[in-house]
Image (cartoon, rainbow, N blue to C red):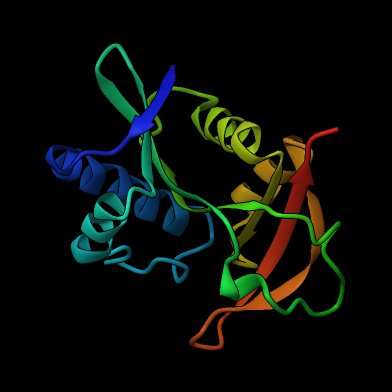
Length: 162
């Protein structure tokens, strides 16, 4: 598997990956995190234009997609009922989705992102037990609760190298 920046020509495949992820989440007790339409095509295209969308691929097949950016994320400025492991510079992962055709893709993506920055923050919905398990399995530490701009609560995690 390898990671590369997403290209606009990948849009159709990305939409399939996100559709699979939405269905998977709904089937596993998390129907509201992404609903039926998140992320919208316009956001996917903006991530690509901004250079923060990446895909995991193997033999030309797109296996997973995710947002990665090194630098401050305003969503993580305040944390409640806990604290971050550190306040060092960090990277963030959002909107990670897999097509479900190859095991280990999400872990591969998270490992790649962590190796880019050495200090990674991520959040997930309280009902997303699958992602919580994935983060625990990959050595992330639960740090507390953050709130999105719309007031939605998320569980916040962090991992650092070393």
